[in-house]
Amino acid sequence: MSGQDPFCRPRCLRRGAALTFVFASVLATGAATGSFGGPGAPGALDGTSTAALRATPGGHRQAVTEAAAEAMAAGESPVEAAERAVSRSGDRWGAVYSEGEYEEFEEALDGAYTGVGLWARRETNGRIQVTRVRDGSPAADAGIRQGDRLRSVDGKGVDGRPVTEVVSLLRGDAEDASAGTTVSLGLQRGTRAWSETLRRARLTTDPVTVRRLTGGATVIKVAAFTRGSGDRVRTALDRAPADSGIVLDLRGNSGGLVTEAVTAASAFLDGGLVATYDENGAQRALHADPGGDTTRPLVALVDGGTMSAAELLTGALQDRGRAVVVGSRTFGKGSVQMPSRLPDGSVAELTVGHYRTPSGRGVDGRGITPDLEADEGALERAETVLSGLGQ
Image (cartoon, rainbow, N blue to C red; front, top):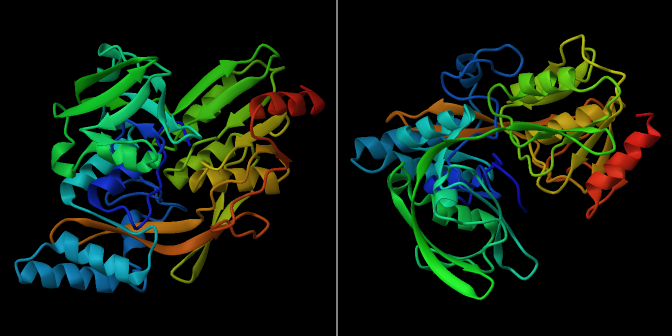
């Protein structure tokens, strides 16, 4: 898996590791979210305030809160007690953050993170290869290039490890992950092997990028649904040449703020249903704004790294007949997390329900099957489909 800045994190990754899984394919990141919003964050899903959403706790939320309060009264760690309660609940996507960690989490939603500026993927032989280096980043300043092999992080070998674990090693523990802290990388280029010690820095992400293919199609790549990304998709669409078909590239996008995914959907739909979701048994619906472009040829490009809010968007475009979906089956995270403050100021994000596509399909554990399967050469296949749609 490769790409930039996924948002989801499984229950088995706690604390610093949970913070790094958010951008699971990038070896440079801080934290973000795979849910609707955060404490104090504007714009919950359907216009309801975040505070109102937190006022309707899930079944295990009370147990987590009580565990944290009891630990605090006993002079123990509230965060660790809450983590144990989440683990016992079986909430795969639940996570607990210290107050400081959640502040980083919120910053990442604005497109900021602490890292070294490497994108990477795991090859079929288990080796970790650098796929991109951010200009002006610590990695670029050290002369690290695309194609270099990452052999170790702080003396720990990375061959065979999932990318998420490598991210966690690069990110470090919560107390060691601030800007200015160091991380030592073992690298190889051809027959040359060497080490570099880098200082982590505060970096910003570019969640939406646009390029024109030689055949005339415009590719709008959405790496993550951070704040403002939905409006940037709309702007990119408005600026695309009138005769240009659109490839909406959601590969490697493992979500973010659902409000931003709904805004992105509104760029391509003229109102109507985007998704439904249950929140503690109550059924709610998400609708696109009217006035979107419904005539321009559109292909949504997905893969196994397309997750959460990105799957919600894909499902809406597919069910509504607005896009041909090309690629491979998506990840299958269709659960809804809501945040709440614990007595010590830490934050628990707990699963409260699941969402469905406009036709009623559940995504969790199933993913979305593309209309046309493609792995290698998926972008070229998308161009071919666009030509058949009348680009």
